[in-house]
Image (cartoon, rainbow over all chains, first blue to last red; front, side):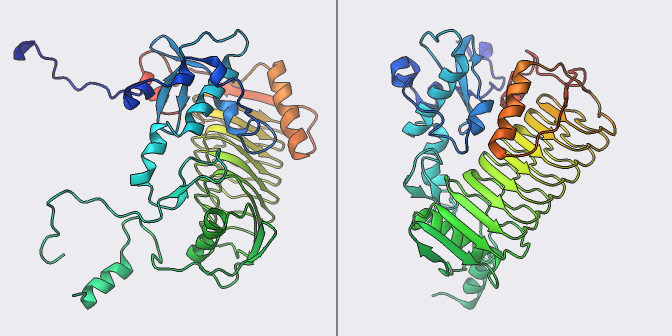
Length: 147
Length: 264
């Protein structure tokens, strides 16, 4: 494309989990990988707790569930049985979180400022991260004299 | 060579904004059979929170009781695992903020902004709560047996806030998702500028806020109300009014998909 034809306008940042990871995950394509997840067992309290608010949505015309831990949509590429839309959306989301594939979880190793479970509250005895956080500095940067 | 100035700088400044950055874990808890308890008398806010994190994250204790918190502020914030936590006494402001997973009982009162930005879990406050209760809550159940102050659930983005008593002015201001159940009366400006979500009120409503309108009751509302009262063993009022967003002021239409994603 010629330089004068280039679209230099700022493009919106993608909010797609596949784009951030560079690939999709098997549980986005195969219902059998998520169907066995016990939603009550992975949530606090005596009902679905925070998963009550998780519903099947659509992103770019594809069924998707929103992962609030990475602010991204996770598309669902298999056929969802009628009447089980929200249940399946919740199970796909939990498969994503339980596996540690959520981009927000992956950022924790370098960016968590306080000790916390790496995989979140849905995994018992998860490894903890964040106990030795140091502020990042740019390569070659030196503290100005007098500071 | 470490100079006096260097040592002073490290003492006074922490890039994370911590007060008492060099505080140590007090390790004062009594631990027995997977349960722990400690008396917070004489401990600073940071020491109480360090003790909690040590128990929950390092010792793997899943059931902790904190006695005599003395209404200190910012207690038990940022607890990000499933556990049972019992706080015997009252909390100051911003208690239990940013939690994700715990099931908590507070036997006393709480100040402003309890459970601010709560992500998941269950919190039961056995007495009254101050203003901004459940501010910006994202998920989970927050139950207040008593009454709450103004702007409860301001900017609420999910979860359920169940209030046994009355609610103050501007309750559910700018609510975006989730549910509120108010067993008593609601003050002026209920649901002002709400985007979405549902408010149930059993008592009188002083006045509705802008774009908050009465909603049509359906079977899902009945199931939801019955389930929540059953779980928490609270006495259910005979009837509720339902309030929702009139969608005249703001709404999520196809022109603003990115704005919509911010509140899902």
